[in-house]
Image 1: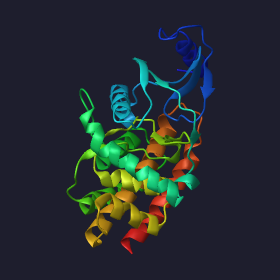
Image 2: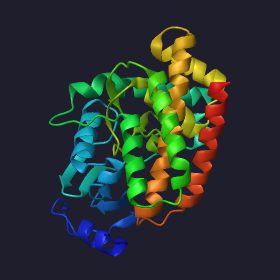
Image 3: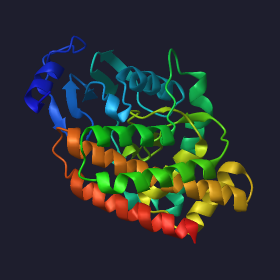
Image 4: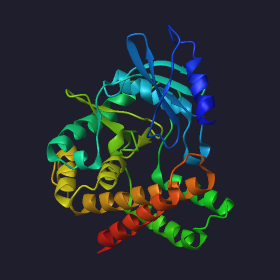
Length: 292
């Protein structure tokens, strides 16, 4: 759906109390986002259909968003219909990578992640997805083969590495994960933090969210040690470090293959080729460090 069609669809929603003029809200690379002022109230509207190639199913996003609100993590869902999610607007600052790397901010983020992991399963209703990064990688690899990706010469080696990483992660605990912990998915309203955008939500290992937070935001080794020790209530031993390191690599490889697939299939105006190159370089450097 192009931007003008999406805007018209948002303006025509039955939930508005008065005529509205949707304003484009930037930032989405899997959906269109708008803000809507309806009388004294303000809302965010997310517009987007299912994206099976990225395992994005909007019924799941809706259920996770509602559960996150019930758990006190995310804003209220006030209206939903096919391809549309209307949420109450939060006046606040979207965090940057640099914000997340501040120790004081990181100390506020971790309890929010723990609340997601432990409290959201109590509130999720209906069918629920699992986000197993190694399944995602295998599925992306098949999409790249079918699409004759320009990255085909690298693909076999990357998937051999993915197999080794899955073995290194080993058996896992299962929690409910956000699975997309970019800085832009955290908001600070001046009093508290919020966690938003549940496109990839699903049951997963807690190691993935911890690794994903670290790799997406450039945490240093000391912060990663603090993250593991605080989450698990004990100093990380060699086995935990090895499993966590493997999941860090998997997180970066997933972001890389996500971008490779998007190069072929996405209609969003975004420089996926540059994003691929950046994440592939980060993956290779992290893999080298983990193996050393």
